[in-house]
Image 1 (cartoon, rainbow, N blue to C red):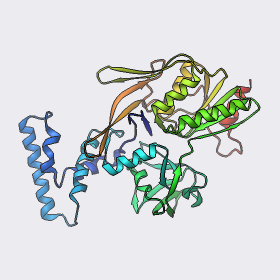
Image 2 (cartoon, one colour):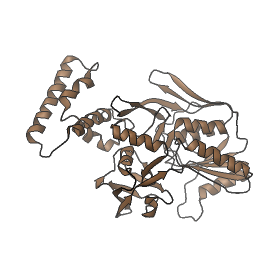
Image 3 (cartoon, rainbow, N blue to C red):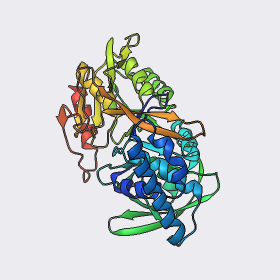
Image 4 (cartoon, one colour):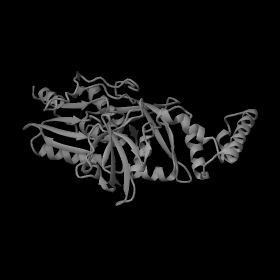
Length: 392
């Protein structure tokens, strides 16, 4: 799940299952020479001496007894990752220069990879397939919605930071990556050739003569333009009312989300955030392009962060009906801080609040109409309900 601004604030994090392991590995190797920069200003001299002594002991046992070869660079990165993971926040973490560059490439909406949208349950660490893009290597290999991503390059990925898993899946166009998925009790191995992918974040169509449908899979740089084009096309086909599908949308760029809401909402506040000092930052709709029709918004338990900003604003203004199941419940925002060597850290910096002043972190948003998706039905019963509501 992610929730960030164009200044690179976002929300993806380390799963709790690997925190202890990363922290342990991170405090070894070349730690002695790196340690002082971590402790300045936070410990008295006695505490610093105790920690430095322990680091030297760890170095001694590694040098004397550790069986395998290792790279100092890996140990150094482990220290940085361990320090951030030690905060105990699954949304806070460290990116190596390579990981940071790869992440930023993905957020721009184009990359070379397998063409699958993934989602992670931060309680279990399990990574599942939301969809395989049509014509992508993932789709051609038979990857299906709800498959569990089990291994990448021979290593289990459950509990690993999703953004780092994505880095491993990406690579130079034409290269291959080995993965395995779990489908029920069956493990299926796949070798996929990476290709250039342009993420189709918006899909649209007319459902009836007057009801349009727009599905937003995530809020990336390309999404705003795709959404505005879709809305214009539907209005050109006679659309009066609109269904917006945010099911399985894990979030994305807050700026893009607010720009889309600015096109739909009346004048007023869209969302506001507060940091640890009580400083408030808010996004406002100027209502220059207010959508006059009725709206229905489809959500589920995987609608998170920026999707919840969207759903919360629609609900608080009373301009649309939320249909589906309780949303994920991520009401905090992370900022990404680039470092001098090309790496970066992401840190939880604020809570966000809906226009009515609600922070939904670890709570979620309850739909106006609670309706479970009937996976056995031939028709999408949630979409059918939205059409019914807008047809009244």
